[in-house]
Length: 79
Image 1 (cartoon, one colour):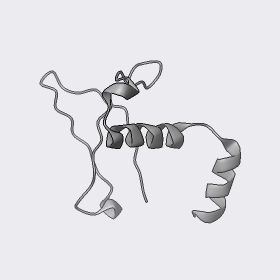
Image 2: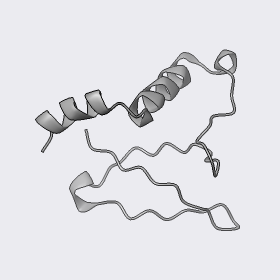
Image 3: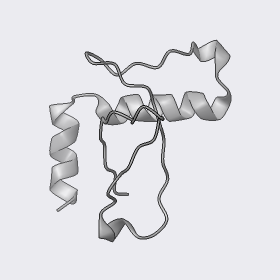
Image 4: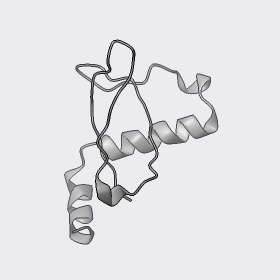
């Protein structure tokens, strides 16, 4: 799976334009999460989320966590 992570500001109307790499194809999934200047946070409590949202948040947190040992494993297999 390929991923592209960006933090961008929207226009005053709330629109956002993203240049998608050609190798991603013509159909992509977009997940929009509010970004904080200092830390990316999600404002909902787990009790306010459905099962899918809890899974997505947990997946996102696992992807962004800084784990040098895990990164070394990924670098070994992804080139």
